[in-house]
Amino acid sequence: MNQSVFIDALKNNDIAALAKIPKSDLHSHAGRAGNLSYIERYTHVKIKPPAHPFDSLGEMNSWFNKNVKSVLPESVDGYLKRIEAAFVQAATDNITVLALSFGIDEIESLGGMRSFVSNIDMLHKTFAPKTMFCPDLALGYTTAELRSLDEIFSFGWFNGIDIMNYMNTYSMHEMKCICHKAKDCGLILKAHIGEFGEAEDVYRYGNELELDQIQHGVLAAKSPRIMRWLADNSVQLNVCPTSNYMLKVCDCYESHPIRTLFDYGVKVTVNTDDLLIFNSTVSEEYLKLYHAGIPADVLDIIRKNGLERG
Image (cartoon, rainbow, N blue to C red; front, side, top):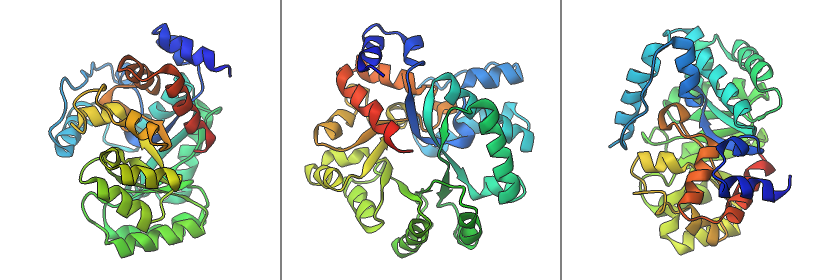
């Protein structure tokens, strides 16, 4: 595609044109990846987006449970409707490469891997058949996950793993073992890090786990040394600007560190994280960053980064 189409859409503030241009979303939690308007049409309940940033992940999760999960049936059907919404959103915003993360509890809720894969593949085929679907296995909730890895990996269905060790569920040694097992199966290695904590955490996780991609990682912008390491080792950061703003990682879009990371040669992409909470599509994310002062040609390079590999 001629890059001027994307650039012109940004300069013209044309969200409809942006929605037609190929993009990726490489950091998106499956059960939270749809659009509020789609859930509203299904439930006939108006859902008001959060009015201000959250003070914590706990407050964010409470908002989601109260305002989204409460209006859908607490059942397999309710869960599958949210996954359906994720694929509908991908098709609507021309997300040509989509990485959705799924927890082992989600697999178990659908009766195990065979039933889970059948259901998710059906939704993908029905609602976003043109989208390259790259599912990630989310880990970090309980050590009981370890007992399921061999069986899950044997299906060859997942494209990557995404370790979320916010609760310190795993030691570094345990995470290394998980990553070695996943790497042997040809999976992309990802982890949530550098959204909270310290810049050094980004280097420590990235280096010791030999990560291919980092979800968030924006605190690396505080350290030129770590940014150079990320660039030199081609570790991609899947950045979620509105999520960072809504969780007080940055004060505003103008102060978001994505431009600093880009200028240091770090490969970055733009993503939604939890669209049903943060209410900002990939197209809207690009427009917000453009209005915050990032040049359109820079954003086009970032857009193309995400299309290279899911």
